[in-house]
Amino acid sequence: MMRPPLILAYLLRFLVLPAIAAGASSCSIKGFPLVKNISDLPQDNYGRGGLSHITVAGSVLHGLKEVEVWLQTFSPGSGTPIHRHSCEEVFIVLKGSGTLLLASSSHEKYPGKPQEHFIFPNSTFHIPVNDAHQVWNSNRHEDLQLLAIISRPPVKVFIYEDWFMPHIAAKLRFPYYWDEQCLQGPDKDEL
Ligand SMILES: *[C@@H]1O[C@H](CO)[C@@H](O)[C@H](O)[C@H]1NC(C)=O
Ligand SMILES: *[C@@H]1O[C@H](CO)[C@@H](O)[C@H](O)[C@H]1NC(C)=O
Image (cartoon, rainbow, N blue to C red; front, side):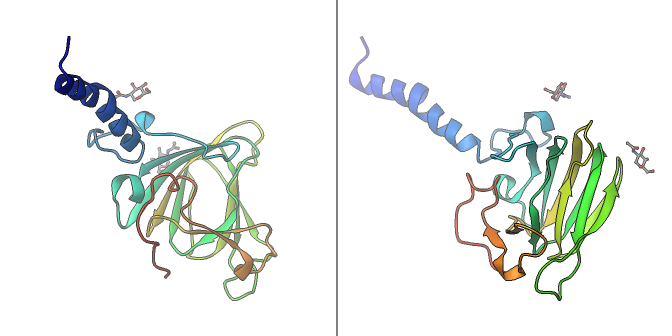
């Protein structure tokens, strides 16, 4: 029979410590090799229908300070909310097609009627800082998959219900969906 200190050591080694490590692992890439298979990274819809999101390289998970990279897949009919953020964003469409809606009316009180742009495989575009935009999969037959690269992570997003909602009424979402579970520490500064 094991003596109490041994039992304690056993409990710690095989039950308690692994549980702590497992809890920590969803919020850290400790234990991942430098070169990672994207398929092994956490993937989730974060409660948003039609979305599959992977943070390929990020602030909260990987400690990046200047950029963050997302791989996102939108099923037909799904897309991002209408939103703005005070960082730059570059998109590269890997698969599928869809629609970019962009309102570049930074002097108006609300975004206003957006310009509509067709996006297609191997297309790329960038969103100017603070311009309200929405990307959605308007193709009924195929998933839309893209890489999104943002500056100044973790992202702080202002969401609009429609294109005529005043900028000041847009709802702040911070931490954003995929940062929520793991983000700790003081709030990020405003620009
Ligand atoms: C990366 O992961 C995918 C899915 O599990 C697998 O099919 C592929 O072989 C992996 N690549 C390498 C080089 O291990
Ligand atoms: C995307 O464009 C680049 C530059 O023309 C080209 O080399 C690459 O093969 C294209 N990729 C696809 C998937 O079409």
